[in-house]
Length: 152
Image 1: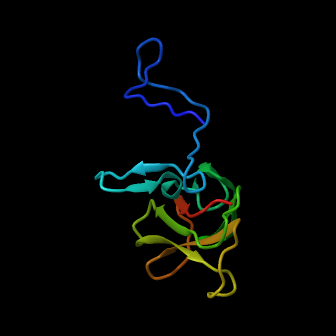
Image 2: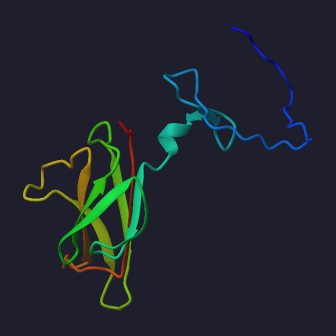
């Protein structure tokens, strides 16, 4: 194996923007290490990327998404999100926000476990509730969710 050592890389036209089709790390099972914002340490690029997100109307119409197959509307304020590429396990995090066009109270998104509050989501689906602060479920005009974790 050869080693290339350089101080700078430039394209033949003198610009410094280099386009590549694929980038793969050689350490830590292919992870790419990126220096932290403060420069004191390194973090793994893959760990900091959002693995699934969606912006939808609280029913089934998805305005935009990444790694999302569908949103299933079970009832007012009760949806299941389906992940296109499965997560490696169910230890992922879910976060969500909702937007309301009325002034009837604060709406929040909470991850729910259908039928059993001690159950866990699967590697390809999770259920989310949009509710007022008094726990009344209701669709919002716009809902967003995203997850972080490890893709399979």
